[in-house]
Image 1: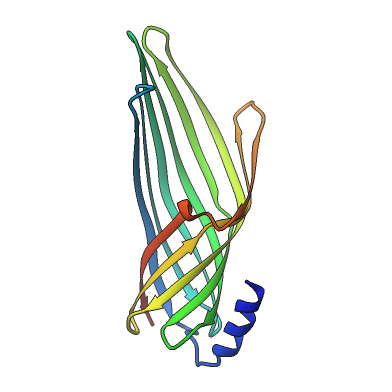
Image 2: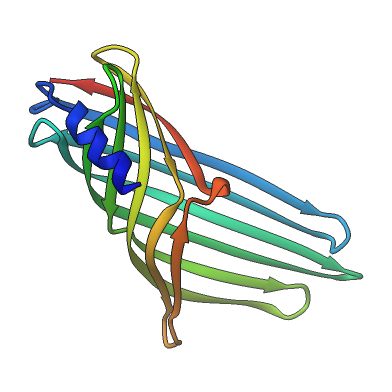
Length: 194
């Protein structure tokens, strides 16, 4: 990766994007239906983002959105439902390197923060809920293909970083992630303007 970045640095001798702003974002929906365990899990996230290039190759911005996960299980007459919903704030900075006239490699440093609630409901036993907060620091590699001066397609592949979540009155859960995981690829469309 370091060699690719060094080569990209030589290819980026262009005027760059300084002063250009952009709007992008992510929308995600996933459903897992485990018939053997009588369990379904639905996840949903919407995370619009905006930013601006402060130099020819460096952009700063932020995202604000919502994410949720709903798990429902059935075991005989007992059904349980766990709902996890959170608001997300994520400032970020990106560094771009040109791979050609329209293709760019970028590295994104972001600091996601989430504030949410987990609610558990079990038939005949009532429900409980717990507030939580989560934060992290991640580096995400990605590619950006510029169709024209106003539109591009972007993708991030995996992440390297640290994330933690702490329930109210409980102990935190820490997660150290390192790798180019093909199951965590994100795709987006970006609109650029001056």
